[in-house]
Image 1: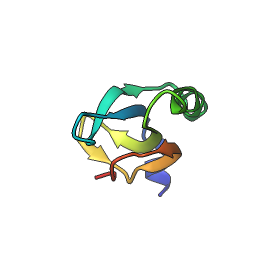
Image 2: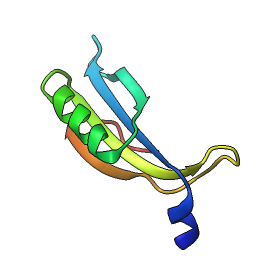
Image 3: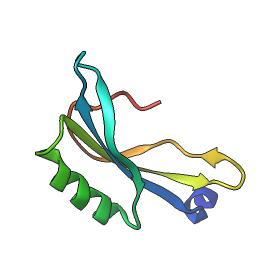
Image 4: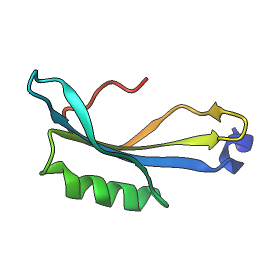
Length: 83
């Protein structure tokens, strides 16, 4: 795991609202964030304005296309399952 700790982290916030059929649609993001703390702060600010919001992170080597398992930092309301 120590090699993963050295990889940069992908930190993202996404917000969702329901469309006319009741399906969740992305209305904000995914937007990359500089820190996990900032991602949580932004997600909390969006939580009362949208049907759902999630902030998550994962280690990522974008150049090689290698991504670790996502870690949920904050979630509120309805969000789709993470793939």
